[in-house]
Amino acid sequence: MNKAQWQNGLSGYDELRQRILAVLDGETDDIARMATLACEVHHADARVDWTGFYRAVSPNLLKIGPYQGGHGCLVIPFGKGVCGTAAQTGAAQIVPDVDAFPGHIACASSTRSELVLPVHDNAGDLIAVFDIDSDQPDAFTQEDADALQSILNEVFGA
Ligand code: SME
Image 1: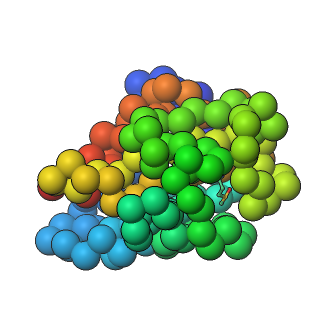
Image 2: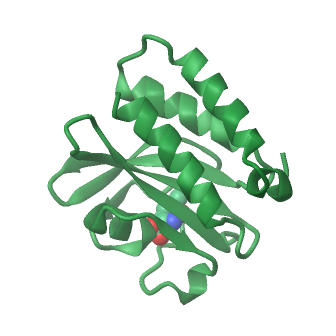
Image 3: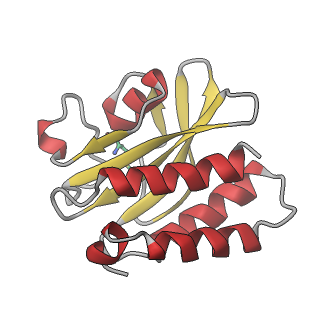
């Protein structure tokens, strides 16, 4: 799947969503859900070089969860970097140039752009953030954010 396919009509996202929901049918364990999403998203698009979850493990702390790609930082405080900002604000972060994002945490020096989305459970509590990193600048769009957020909401909010 290439960027054009994800941007136009989101047909790639429909397939991705259906595959994820089929694999996770009846699964209620959040780690199993996260591992499946990280794997499916990571292998769905060549733009993606790191894909994974940081879990909210205490009121102000994120800890690494299931991921695909090179080593990720183990711990990120709320408010730090892109992931910590998404956790603190509860808002999606689309970052076209990580060097222009104050406090960006560079786990891999090759990362150029990122998309980080909040993950809420069915009570509306933040349980994690979903971090997608690309070695290409400006890799992600609002359409990517909306489509992936809707899959996350369906999987973890259900
Ligand atoms: N991108 C993150 C750090 C995590 S790694 O890139 C895997 C950030 O600045 O929040």
